[in-house]
Image 1 (cartoon, rainbow, N blue to C red):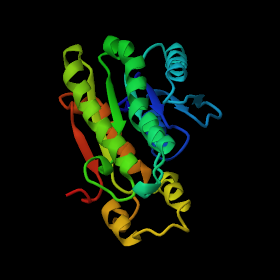
Image 2 (cartoon, rainbow, N blue to C red):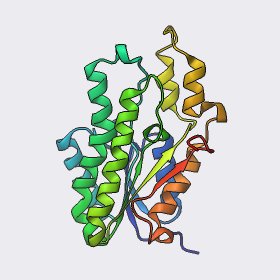
Image 3 (tube, rainbow, N blue to C red):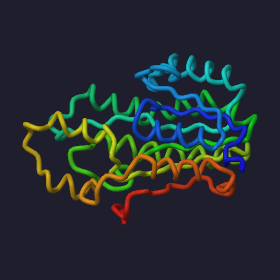
Length: 239
């Protein structure tokens, strides 16, 4: 039986690990031709700094040349560096906005002519941190809240072109992102109980495949009437 993405062409950012890798594997398993891009490129993964306009243009052009067009774009690439607000330096703030907010904007904009042609769709990974506040993550929360409204705006604007745009907001996921975010703070004085309670970590880290399943649903024809949605996959953390 053919998969949900037979003959579909997909671009996935942040494809080197975690959620991005799971999305690439699932879409490919269900019939899609997939190109993954990542800052850490290797093997079949193309190099791309999603915060850099020139890098994005090159990566999207190479993807389209390889695939012959685009039907699905999945924005996964992201960063999270935990900081007390008084320790939040400007460079860290800018990096969060560059990767988490500007990145999906640049990728979506570069891919738009091809998505218009195919009447394709965009799925972007945000976070429950874009729906509810979390301590020590002002930059991360701001960037993720911004990308949610960016995608909802695109859903309204691009609907007439037949391009759907949706967002997934994961809770705690068992990837290197939250582990690395916390690792550099082993000597910092933080209220760890507050951080764990508000981040959803007490509910246990979900496997990345759970987020990939949500992405695949929104990107598939089963969600043909779904656009502008913000789907929380968080075991009830944001309730």
